[in-house]
Length: 413
Image (cartoon, rainbow, N blue to C red):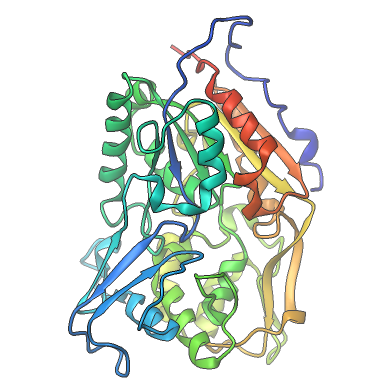
């Protein structure tokens, strides 16, 4: 953790005015959850596809972490059909250069409902013990995790969900909770709305291990792949190729990759054993050039560091109650045989540093920049030894969340 722990703001200290002590019970704000990377249930509908010979021409399949729904589509078929097409046309805005494969449509299942993100059952139950009701004052801002928040109607759809949740709950401002990649999408929303909108609709923001500046691991995933169902690595070269190509095609992969503006050269993310060359986040242009991936290089140049957060103009300017984990060895990269697409990684070749088991300390400490918010509350609570996936189910963290929901928001004007 280096010197970062000394800079943590204890829960309850705020840059704004503290709430009154001994105040009467308050109506708690409704909650909108932004799930982690691929924790939103998606359904793909396939009609007369010809992209993937040997795969079913038509049918449906689901895509989400811990997906337990059987399908006629193999993992390789699912990867190939979820691989986005990229049109290299500089006259088109970058978000419009991506498209689904012909005959494939992808939809969010049960949008807005807790059923759309079943991983967070412990969080829902804890809120229920505090008087919350699912799908009334607990709602979920799901998204297609392949896409960035400037795509797929995310912004308009999510803003409407928050405004509807506000109105449906007696015009009470909404508290945003995000886990892992979810805070990236919440931050994009907050920084693309006016302060007047935030003052009206937002109670506060709880990012849980927010992946704001990205993580080193995403660079190696573009060479090895990683299966969404269990986040395990493919065990066949065919699956490794199909998965890696899917990640290379998705703009969110680059948005989620370590931003050199924050990371610099503080960690190695790829070590090429065939040449002895090492690559840090700062070296990503050379990495994609050396790998013969010019399209990846173009997407990377646009989407790495896409969600701004570290400069004052990009502060969320709402009360923030951050949570993170620490003290666990965390994969940030890999030693690869070469820079070809579709490799099966050697478990002994992973590169690690301290973190929460998924995101490294650099990532998890990055929102300390928000201590400089002019007025709003900021805190970042450490949870040593609590793994990334366990954080949103951790009883102590959930107790703190319920406490936060009972607090008045800071009045800055």
